[in-house]
Length: 140
Image (cartoon, rainbow, N blue to C red; front, side):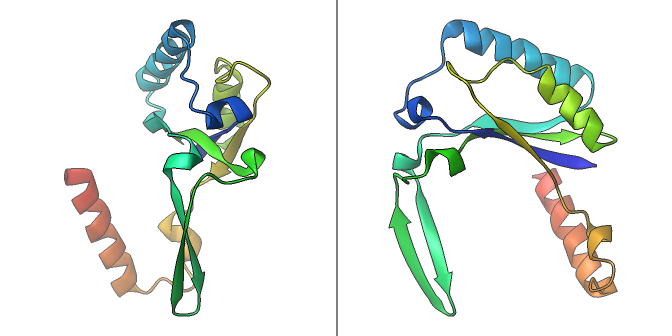
């Protein structure tokens, strides 16, 4: 099972305050543990929303909205992608994480859909295309 682990933004992270050397060292050690356990598939921090954009879809129309975005509690400051056996295992790994912010913070854990989750509507042709694209991405 794969889980996206989302580090929620804070007012401070949205201003672009960089983490301290101590926090970077602690996160580095945590990431090493994840790698050694075969859990970590990917993980990165994100620039503040002031450097981002959103694209709003309405039928065939597309509207680009430049950041920053107002609701800090809804924004993401970083992420990990874990490969674990269960949501409980993902939770246990997150509980071992250093606090990613200089203040109270929150990390959200969401399971990633797998092809089998779409079994009722995923035709053999669509499955084959998905597998081919995934192989291309992994080989890149």
